[in-house]
Length: 110
Image (cartoon, rainbow, N blue to C red; front, side, top):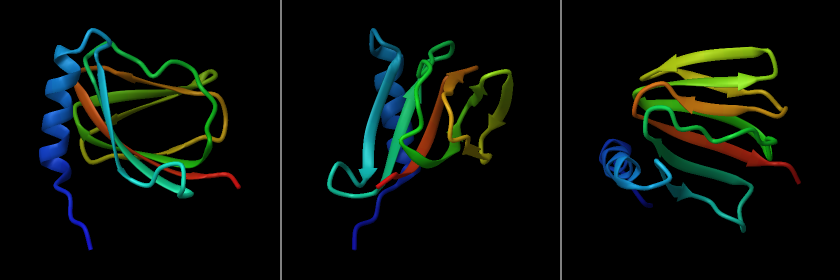
């Protein structure tokens, strides 16, 4: 069994994101190319975005710190600490409305 403190990891990744020229930092907590399930902590400085991209499978975004906006076409959802957003299976983006950290959970399509 492996245990990870998401609180500590979120703090660490946010420090990296704030200092990075890209304004982002990420670490895969579980999974990878050899697994269908992947969980990644993503930190973004305020104003940064993932950019539009396709969803690789079923996905959720759990906000660990800050506030984000998920946009899919004309629809958008704001989420705060503790919120869980189901990601539409369509082209979308996530923007940090303030310094933010999310836990992205994806089950990739076969």
